[in-house]
Image: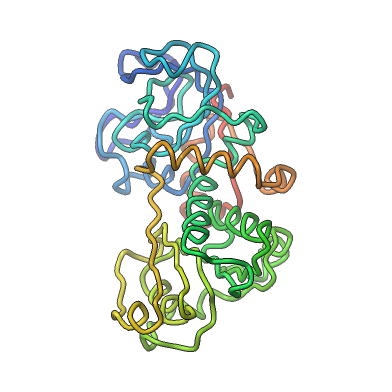
Length: 325
Protein backbone atom coordinates (compact mmCIF):
# COMPACT_ATOMS: atom_id res chain seq x y z
CA UNK A 1 0.00 0.00 0.00
CA UNK A 2 1.40 3.38 -1.02
CA UNK A 3 0.40 6.17 1.35
CA UNK A 4 1.23 9.55 2.80
CA UNK A 5 1.82 9.02 6.51
CA UNK A 6 2.07 11.33 9.54
CA UNK A 7 3.83 9.13 12.10
CA UNK A 8 3.38 11.26 15.21
CA UNK A 9 2.38 14.71 16.40
CA UNK A 10 4.94 17.21 15.14
CA UNK A 11 6.55 14.72 12.76
CA UNK A 12 7.06 15.67 9.13
CA UNK A 13 4.75 13.75 6.79
CA UNK A 14 6.35 11.22 4.47
CA UNK A 15 5.41 9.23 1.38
CA UNK A 16 5.67 5.49 2.03
CA UNK A 17 5.70 2.92 -0.77
CA UNK A 18 5.13 -0.12 1.46
CA UNK A 19 2.82 1.06 4.26
CA UNK A 20 1.39 -1.68 6.47
CA UNK A 21 -2.23 -2.34 5.46
CA UNK A 22 -2.92 -3.73 8.94
CA UNK A 23 -3.06 -0.08 10.06
CA UNK A 24 -6.46 0.15 8.41
CA UNK A 25 -9.79 -0.63 10.09
CA UNK A 26 -13.38 -0.48 8.91
CA UNK A 27 -16.12 -2.74 7.58
CA UNK A 28 -15.69 -1.87 3.90
CA UNK A 29 -12.40 -2.44 2.04
CA UNK A 30 -11.57 -0.23 -0.93
CA UNK A 31 -9.08 0.36 -3.67
CA UNK A 32 -8.77 4.14 -3.59
CA UNK A 33 -9.02 5.53 -7.12
CA UNK A 34 -8.83 9.24 -6.41
CA UNK A 35 -8.84 11.74 -3.59
CA UNK A 36 -8.98 15.52 -3.55
CA UNK A 37 -7.08 18.28 -1.80
CA UNK A 38 -8.83 20.51 0.72
CA UNK A 39 -7.69 23.28 3.05
CA UNK A 40 -8.06 20.85 5.96
CA UNK A 41 -5.63 18.47 4.26
CA UNK A 42 -3.05 21.22 4.03
CA UNK A 43 -3.54 21.97 7.73
CA UNK A 44 -3.12 18.30 8.65
CA UNK A 45 0.11 18.00 6.68
CA UNK A 46 1.44 21.24 8.17
CA UNK A 47 0.72 20.07 11.72
CA UNK A 48 -1.96 22.67 12.36
CA UNK A 49 -4.26 20.73 14.65
CA UNK A 50 -6.34 18.64 12.24
CA UNK A 51 -4.70 15.26 12.88
CA UNK A 52 -6.27 13.75 16.00
CA UNK A 53 -4.68 10.29 15.86
CA UNK A 54 -1.25 8.95 14.99
CA UNK A 55 0.01 7.41 12.88
CA UNK A 56 -2.41 8.91 10.37
CA UNK A 57 -3.00 8.78 6.63
CA UNK A 58 -4.46 12.21 5.79
CA UNK A 59 -7.02 12.99 3.09
CA UNK A 60 -10.61 13.83 4.04
CA UNK A 61 -12.02 12.59 0.70
CA UNK A 62 -11.86 9.43 -1.31
CA UNK A 63 -13.48 7.82 -4.32
CA UNK A 64 -12.94 4.09 -4.50
CA UNK A 65 -13.97 0.65 -5.67
CA UNK A 66 -15.14 -1.84 -3.07
CA UNK A 67 -12.99 -4.98 -2.83
CA UNK A 68 -14.70 -6.53 0.17
CA UNK A 69 -17.46 -5.68 2.64
CA UNK A 70 -18.80 -6.93 5.96
CA UNK A 71 -21.90 -4.79 5.33
CA UNK A 72 -24.56 -6.22 3.04
CA UNK A 73 -25.26 -2.81 1.48
CA UNK A 74 -22.00 -2.97 -0.49
CA UNK A 75 -20.42 -5.57 -2.75
CA UNK A 76 -17.10 -5.96 -4.52
CA UNK A 77 -16.97 -3.71 -7.57
CA UNK A 78 -19.25 -0.96 -6.22
CA UNK A 79 -18.01 2.57 -6.87
CA UNK A 80 -18.34 4.72 -3.76
CA UNK A 81 -17.52 8.16 -2.41
CA UNK A 82 -16.75 9.27 1.13
CA UNK A 83 -16.31 12.78 2.48
CA UNK A 84 -15.43 13.63 6.07
CA UNK A 85 -16.71 11.19 8.69
CA UNK A 86 -13.39 11.62 10.48
CA UNK A 87 -11.18 10.21 7.72
CA UNK A 88 -7.97 12.17 7.40
CA UNK A 89 -8.50 13.45 10.96
CA UNK A 90 -9.15 10.64 13.46
CA UNK A 91 -9.21 7.73 10.97
CA UNK A 92 -6.99 6.91 8.01
CA UNK A 93 -8.00 8.81 4.90
CA UNK A 94 -7.75 9.02 1.15
CA UNK A 95 -4.08 9.82 0.50
CA UNK A 96 -3.34 6.13 -0.06
CA UNK A 97 -3.97 3.37 -2.56
CA UNK A 98 -6.07 1.35 -0.07
CA UNK A 99 -8.63 2.18 2.61
CA UNK A 100 -11.04 0.61 5.06
CA UNK A 101 -14.02 2.76 6.08
CA UNK A 102 -17.38 2.78 7.86
CA UNK A 103 -20.35 1.76 5.75
CA UNK A 104 -22.75 4.19 7.45
CA UNK A 105 -21.20 7.25 5.79
CA UNK A 106 -20.40 5.67 2.43
CA UNK A 107 -22.41 6.79 -0.60
CA UNK A 108 -22.73 4.74 -3.76
CA UNK A 109 -21.51 6.89 -6.65
CA UNK A 110 -24.47 8.31 -8.62
CA UNK A 111 -24.73 6.66 -12.04
CA UNK A 112 -24.36 9.94 -13.92
CA UNK A 113 -21.18 10.97 -12.10
CA UNK A 114 -17.69 9.72 -13.00
CA UNK A 115 -15.07 8.99 -10.30
CA UNK A 116 -13.03 11.92 -11.64
CA UNK A 117 -15.93 14.35 -11.24
CA UNK A 118 -16.82 12.99 -7.81
CA UNK A 119 -13.23 13.55 -6.68
CA UNK A 120 -13.24 17.06 -8.13
CA UNK A 121 -16.40 17.82 -6.16
CA UNK A 122 -14.98 16.35 -2.95
CA UNK A 123 -15.69 17.75 0.49
CA UNK A 124 -15.65 21.30 -0.88
CA UNK A 125 -18.45 20.67 -3.36
CA UNK A 126 -20.32 18.43 -0.93
CA UNK A 127 -20.18 21.21 1.68
CA UNK A 128 -21.31 23.78 -0.88
CA UNK A 129 -24.34 21.66 -1.73
CA UNK A 130 -25.17 21.17 1.95
CA UNK A 131 -25.14 24.95 2.32
CA UNK A 132 -27.37 25.42 -0.74
CA UNK A 133 -29.80 22.84 0.65
CA UNK A 134 -29.94 24.76 3.95
CA UNK A 135 -31.00 27.85 2.02
CA UNK A 136 -33.57 25.82 0.12
CA UNK A 137 -34.97 24.27 3.29
CA UNK A 138 -35.51 27.70 4.87
CA UNK A 139 -37.44 28.94 1.85
CA UNK A 140 -34.84 31.10 0.09
CA UNK A 141 -35.80 31.48 -3.58
CA UNK A 142 -34.20 33.44 -6.43
CA UNK A 143 -36.95 36.03 -6.08
CA UNK A 144 -35.85 36.82 -2.52
CA UNK A 145 -32.79 38.79 -3.65
CA UNK A 146 -29.00 38.58 -3.83
CA UNK A 147 -27.05 35.71 -2.29
CA UNK A 148 -23.54 36.41 -1.01
CA UNK A 149 -20.75 33.82 -1.21
CA UNK A 150 -17.57 34.51 0.79
CA UNK A 151 -14.24 32.80 0.20
CA UNK A 152 -15.47 32.76 -3.36
CA UNK A 153 -12.24 31.67 -5.06
CA UNK A 154 -11.81 28.58 -2.89
CA UNK A 155 -13.17 25.15 -3.69
CA UNK A 156 -16.40 25.36 -1.69
CA UNK A 157 -17.01 28.98 -2.65
CA UNK A 158 -16.44 28.31 -6.35
CA UNK A 159 -18.88 25.41 -6.44
CA UNK A 160 -21.43 27.29 -4.30
CA UNK A 161 -21.45 30.09 -6.88
CA UNK A 162 -22.00 27.63 -9.73
CA UNK A 163 -24.79 25.81 -7.88
CA UNK A 164 -26.60 28.97 -6.81
CA UNK A 165 -26.34 30.57 -10.26
CA UNK A 166 -27.59 27.33 -11.79
CA UNK A 167 -30.65 27.56 -9.56
CA UNK A 168 -31.35 31.07 -10.78
CA UNK A 169 -29.99 33.12 -7.88
CA UNK A 170 -28.18 36.41 -8.39
CA UNK A 171 -24.82 35.77 -6.70
CA UNK A 172 -22.41 38.29 -5.18
CA UNK A 173 -18.90 36.87 -4.76
CA UNK A 174 -16.59 38.17 -2.04
CA UNK A 175 -12.85 37.66 -2.59
CA UNK A 176 -9.52 39.13 -1.58
CA UNK A 177 -8.20 38.78 -5.13
CA UNK A 178 -10.77 40.57 -7.24
CA UNK A 179 -8.38 41.73 -9.95
CA UNK A 180 -6.87 38.27 -10.31
CA UNK A 181 -10.04 36.18 -9.95
CA UNK A 182 -12.88 38.49 -11.01
CA UNK A 183 -13.26 37.02 -14.50
CA UNK A 184 -13.01 33.49 -13.11
CA UNK A 185 -15.83 34.18 -10.62
CA UNK A 186 -18.06 35.71 -13.27
CA UNK A 187 -17.53 32.69 -15.49
CA UNK A 188 -18.78 30.56 -12.60
CA UNK A 189 -21.96 32.64 -12.50
CA UNK A 190 -21.28 35.55 -10.13
CA UNK A 191 -23.20 38.68 -11.13
CA UNK A 192 -21.05 40.93 -8.96
CA UNK A 193 -17.63 40.68 -7.29
CA UNK A 194 -16.79 42.63 -4.13
CA UNK A 195 -13.62 43.05 -2.09
CA UNK A 196 -13.65 40.97 1.08
CA UNK A 197 -12.43 44.00 3.05
CA UNK A 198 -15.94 45.44 2.79
CA UNK A 199 -16.96 42.81 5.33
CA UNK A 200 -13.80 41.71 7.09
CA UNK A 201 -11.93 44.75 8.39
CA UNK A 202 -14.00 45.71 11.44
CA UNK A 203 -17.36 44.75 12.93
CA UNK A 204 -20.04 47.33 12.27
CA UNK A 205 -23.36 47.90 14.02
CA UNK A 206 -25.38 44.74 14.75
CA UNK A 207 -28.04 46.00 12.33
CA UNK A 208 -26.88 47.58 9.06
CA UNK A 209 -28.51 48.26 5.68
CA UNK A 210 -30.28 45.15 4.39
CA UNK A 211 -28.14 43.98 1.49
CA UNK A 212 -28.41 40.18 1.10
CA UNK A 213 -31.35 37.80 1.03
CA UNK A 214 -29.01 34.99 2.03
CA UNK A 215 -25.35 34.05 2.24
CA UNK A 216 -22.98 31.10 2.16
CA UNK A 217 -20.02 31.87 4.43
CA UNK A 218 -16.73 30.06 4.84
CA UNK A 219 -14.93 32.85 6.70
CA UNK A 220 -16.57 33.41 10.10
CA UNK A 221 -15.47 36.03 12.67
CA UNK A 222 -15.92 39.72 11.74
CA UNK A 223 -17.02 38.82 8.23
CA UNK A 224 -19.88 36.66 9.48
CA UNK A 225 -20.94 39.30 12.01
CA UNK A 226 -21.21 41.91 9.25
CA UNK A 227 -23.05 39.49 6.94
CA UNK A 228 -25.66 38.87 9.65
CA UNK A 229 -26.03 42.61 10.15
CA UNK A 230 -26.62 43.13 6.41
CA UNK A 231 -28.98 40.20 5.80
CA UNK A 232 -32.56 41.12 4.96
CA UNK A 233 -35.64 40.15 6.95
CA UNK A 234 -36.28 36.41 6.89
CA UNK A 235 -32.90 35.65 5.34
CA UNK A 236 -30.60 32.69 5.97
CA UNK A 237 -26.83 32.55 6.38
CA UNK A 238 -25.34 29.07 5.91
CA UNK A 239 -21.97 29.01 7.66
CA UNK A 240 -19.42 26.25 7.09
CA UNK A 241 -15.97 27.74 7.79
CA UNK A 242 -13.81 29.89 10.03
CA UNK A 243 -10.84 30.99 7.93
CA UNK A 244 -10.87 34.41 9.61
CA UNK A 245 -11.53 32.92 13.04
CA UNK A 246 -14.06 31.10 15.25
CA UNK A 247 -15.17 34.20 17.15
CA UNK A 248 -18.48 35.92 16.40
CA UNK A 249 -19.06 39.42 17.75
CA UNK A 250 -22.74 40.19 17.31
CA UNK A 251 -26.00 40.50 19.25
CA UNK A 252 -29.40 38.83 19.14
CA UNK A 253 -30.81 41.80 17.19
CA UNK A 254 -30.49 40.35 13.65
CA UNK A 255 -32.22 37.17 14.78
CA UNK A 256 -35.04 38.80 16.75
CA UNK A 257 -35.74 41.96 14.75
CA UNK A 258 -35.16 40.54 11.27
CA UNK A 259 -35.98 36.87 11.80
CA UNK A 260 -32.65 35.76 10.37
CA UNK A 261 -31.52 32.13 10.47
CA UNK A 262 -27.88 31.25 11.07
CA UNK A 263 -27.63 27.69 9.75
CA UNK A 264 -24.51 25.68 10.55
CA UNK A 265 -23.16 23.30 7.91
CA UNK A 266 -21.18 20.26 9.10
CA UNK A 267 -20.01 17.99 6.30
CA UNK A 268 -18.05 15.68 8.63
CA UNK A 269 -21.01 14.37 10.62
CA UNK A 270 -23.77 14.65 8.01
CA UNK A 271 -26.11 11.64 8.32
CA UNK A 272 -26.36 9.19 5.44
CA UNK A 273 -29.79 10.34 4.11
CA UNK A 274 -28.48 13.92 3.85
CA UNK A 275 -25.28 12.71 2.20
CA UNK A 276 -27.28 10.81 -0.40
CA UNK A 277 -29.58 13.78 -0.99
CA UNK A 278 -26.60 16.10 -1.52
CA UNK A 279 -24.81 13.75 -3.90
CA UNK A 280 -27.96 13.14 -5.94
CA UNK A 281 -28.42 16.90 -6.26
CA UNK A 282 -24.77 17.40 -7.24
CA UNK A 283 -25.02 14.75 -9.95
CA UNK A 284 -28.19 16.39 -11.26
CA UNK A 285 -27.26 20.07 -11.05
CA UNK A 286 -23.54 20.65 -11.33
CA UNK A 287 -22.25 21.48 -14.80
CA UNK A 288 -19.39 19.01 -15.26
CA UNK A 289 -17.80 21.04 -18.05
CA UNK A 290 -17.67 23.99 -15.67
CA UNK A 291 -16.28 21.69 -12.97
CA UNK A 292 -13.55 20.53 -15.37
CA UNK A 293 -12.60 24.13 -16.04
CA UNK A 294 -11.87 24.82 -12.35
CA UNK A 295 -10.11 21.51 -11.59
CA UNK A 296 -6.43 20.63 -11.64
CA UNK A 297 -4.81 17.28 -10.86
CA UNK A 298 -1.72 16.25 -8.91
CA UNK A 299 -0.19 12.89 -7.96
CA UNK A 300 0.22 11.39 -4.51
CA UNK A 301 3.91 12.25 -4.76
CA UNK A 302 3.00 15.97 -4.88
CA UNK A 303 0.67 16.00 -1.88
CA UNK A 304 3.18 16.98 0.82
CA UNK A 305 4.69 20.12 -0.79
CA UNK A 306 1.22 21.18 -2.01
CA UNK A 307 0.20 21.99 1.58
CA UNK A 308 2.16 25.23 1.61
CA UNK A 309 0.49 26.36 -1.59
CA UNK A 310 -3.08 25.77 -0.45
CA UNK A 311 -2.51 27.30 2.98
CA UNK A 312 -1.06 30.47 1.44
CA UNK A 313 -4.16 30.98 -0.70
CA UNK A 314 -2.37 30.05 -3.91
CA UNK A 315 -4.98 27.50 -5.00
CA UNK A 316 -8.33 28.31 -6.55
CA UNK A 317 -11.04 25.91 -7.60
CA UNK A 318 -10.52 22.19 -7.01
CA UNK A 319 -7.54 19.83 -6.97
CA UNK A 320 -7.87 16.09 -7.60
CA UNK A 321 -5.25 13.70 -6.23
CA UNK A 322 -4.48 10.69 -8.43
CA UNK A 323 -3.15 8.16 -5.91
CA UNK A 324 -1.59 6.05 -8.67
CA UNK A 325 0.95 8.77 -9.49
